[in-house]
Length: 342
Image (cartoon, rainbow, N blue to C red):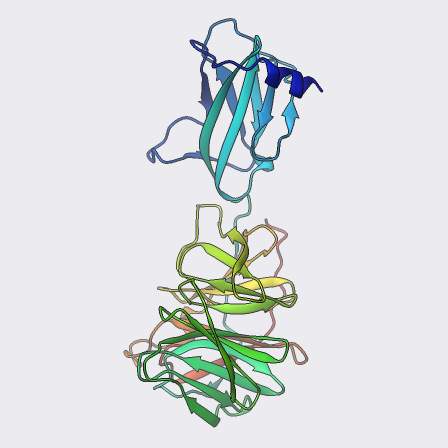
């Protein structure tokens, strides 16, 4: 009731602006950096002016500061990444709005793990791998490049290609995911997503407005990447239903590529390096970084591209990894991450 009464007496708060005392302006003028355990401090510019109430315009929460000289906003109320914080400050029946962009980094320093216990299977070095998954005792792989895009069924025991389907020569195929016993295959910039059955028979083609990179399924919902630090949760019609930003303790993690959902966490390749990040899908925080750089001898295989391809056999708890034009598949047991140091 008090909020509605205040709204009846709203005026522009001339001479009594609001400023953000903390965090201070940094090197980037587009936002202000804040840590998870920090507190943002707002004050009124007019000396002696008291803050009667503050309304968060995002969720309409109303705050009545105990110390009317300042307003404290806990950073833990924000999401990792860039937050558009819009607050209305009321003082003496007048209002002043504050719009700030607060960039919050994760409070979790990722656990560092080196992949050193694995065995290898052969892999077609002509395969420009974009997606990899395990289904019905077989590995399924999507490969890219215009004129060379394909889908393959691979024997997970020896790496033999059992079946190969050459895709439309005009498209650049990208990541794929299994959902409702259908293979969903993205394209890079073609604005299309294809559906196939387990025999690689095409079922349908749909429009897709995002740039296609990686794809996986989380609780019967498709999750896609587009090379940024944003992951997109898609509707049944491939429209964006919601998003999360992916951040570690240093900032945003860009160039997220191939995705795989493993035991409640999102595993992701990052274009440009041979590390896999393990993301908490509820908040976008990177909890683990897996270094797989020793899985490929780049002096011996100079044409091998980046690590790209993650598949999981849940029954045997085996993880399959490969990369673009890699000579082999990596097979390892699912790791148990000790996060006691975090």
